[in-house]
Length: 197
Image 1 (cartoon, rainbow, N blue to C red):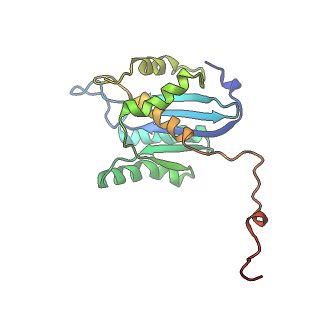
Image 2: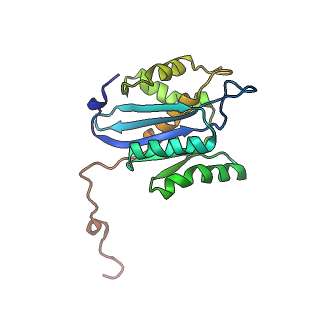
Image 3: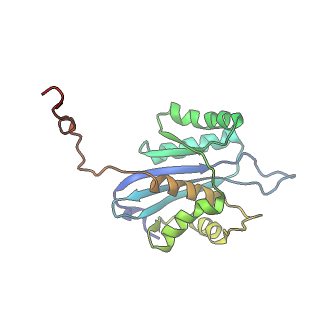
């Protein structure tokens, strides 16, 4: 666990969301959470889990919370939203992503084909190899508790933070970041046409 002041220069930052749409009620007192995990790949080669939020609100309320968090995260943090298969998934993705796009944020799709446990293995492996640091915050205890309880047989367990963590890590680990000193030089891409010589 590190202080927010000790996070080095970020190469890339994302916030991945796992969405739910039910508030607790008499018929369903313990619904899933909407969870958002902000994670960065930094210049020291470590992954930093910078912030995690989870809440159980109706879609309209949750969408406003998500947009407020995006404004706090800043435009450099790309927002990733799940897109399920089928026409309904397309409509849902467009509904959730529209406010972010209209506010000038970069938005990416999370199109999941793998199971929860398989998706989590990349992050778990990075943790086991000492490549993950967590920024200290009031959300730490709930975050650690959920990740520690998660197993291959995860039935009847909440794993919304787990899913958002898996997706954030996959977006960072699958990306390629150009070095700071990279310069585009078109002149090096040309050569003499030997057929005209």
